[in-house]
Image (cartoon, rainbow, N blue to C red):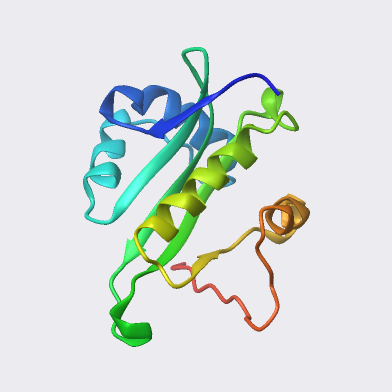
Length: 144
């Protein structure tokens, strides 16, 4: 694997983040870099990205959410995990996920959840990162 630095993204990374979002989404494409600001400014949310030299090659969004149960420890939700297609299989996504997991545990989260699309063939990747589908059923309701 090429060396990569993982860090929290900021507004200056918006254009590169949009490139990754557009590789991920099957919905409408992201076109407004200003839309990235409210995401990274949201309390408890951070987007972590892996950089190979100055190029953003992988990223994931981590939401840390307050909670009442489990001794009021937060729980984490991971979204928008993506690696540039040309850089897949080189360990960048795994490095981002390791940082996401470390960040959630450092915040005393009691669990980390994520969903992955059925047709994305990413289950094995998430299992290799330590995730399991045992004991949970994921459901989604989308607005028409």
